[in-house]
Length: 380
Image (cartoon, rainbow, N blue to C red; front, side, top):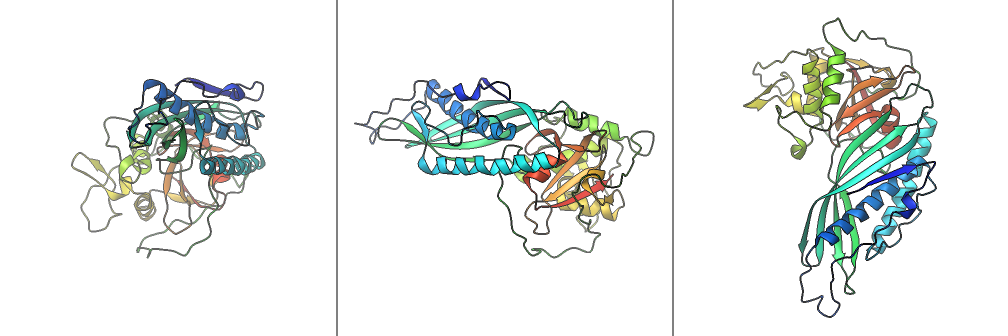
C-alpha cells in the first residue's frame, strides 16, 4: 500500500480518495452469488483503511486536510453508523491534540502506510486485516525533542456487500492491547472500586503527572546496571522482535516480556528459585517463564518486594531505563508496561514498548490520551 504523507505546509490528504474498480456484485443475482475478493477489491479495502487512519492522524497535526466527516470513496463507503462513529473519533482526537498542546507537544508531519494482511469473504461479509505503520515528526517546541515517534498497529475491518454492488465499511477495531495509539481516540473512564484483593506484597504508589517536578538525577553507566544498554536493546527490537524470545501478543500482551528483555540486557540478574508465590522469581527459560517476567502486576510486585525498583513521585522524573506502568481504567490492576529509552534535556521522558509496537512516544502523549488513568513510575 502506498504511503500517505500529511504536512501543515501541504495537503496531500484531500486528494486521497478511493477510485479503483471494485468487485462486481450484480444487483440481480447478489443474493445468490457469494462475492469474491479480487486484487482490485483488496487494494480498495486497503485504501479505505488508509483513508480512515490518515484522517485520524491529520487531526493531531491540525491540518486543514482533516475532514469532519468521511465521504464515499468510489464504490466503497462507510455505513451511516460507521460514519457517525468516525466523526465522533475525529472530534475526540481534537481533545487529545488540545491536551498535547497544553503539555508542550505537537507534530509537524506524519506518514501512514497501510498494508492488507488478509481479506476473507463469508456470505456478504468481508473481513479484512490490515497493518498500519505511522511515523510522526515532533515539532521543535523546546528544541530537544527526538526526531520522530512511530508505531505499528493492527486493525480488523468488516465490509458488507450491498444489493447495488457496492461495499460498506460497517465495523473497524484495533486488535492490539496496551497503550492506545497516538491517533486512537479513547473514551474517558469513571473511577471504579478495586476489583481484586491485593496480595501481601509491596504495592507501588501512584505517580503524579504534572510537568517540571523536582529532578531525580541518575547515573546511566558505570554502576550496577547499564541503562544505555537497556535503551539500546529496547530501541533495536521495538518493531522487529528478537527471535531468541517467545512472543506473548496473543496471550495477554508482550509489553512486560519485552520490558524484561531490555532489563536483562542492562544487567538485571534472573532469579529462578522455585517458590509458591507468583512474584518471587524473575526469569526466562526454554521450558518456562516466571509470571513476573511477563505479567504487568507480577513484575511490579516482584521488583518492589525484591527492591529492584524504587517508586518515583512523578512520571517526569523518569530517565533512561526507568519504567512506566498504567492502570487505564483505574480498577486497581495495572494494564501496561513501558521503558524510557530517551529523555530530552528539558526533562521529557520518551517511551518505547510492544503492543502496539511503538518507538519514542512522549509521556505527554500517553497522558493526553488517558488523562484520568493511574500512573506508576519506577527507578530501575
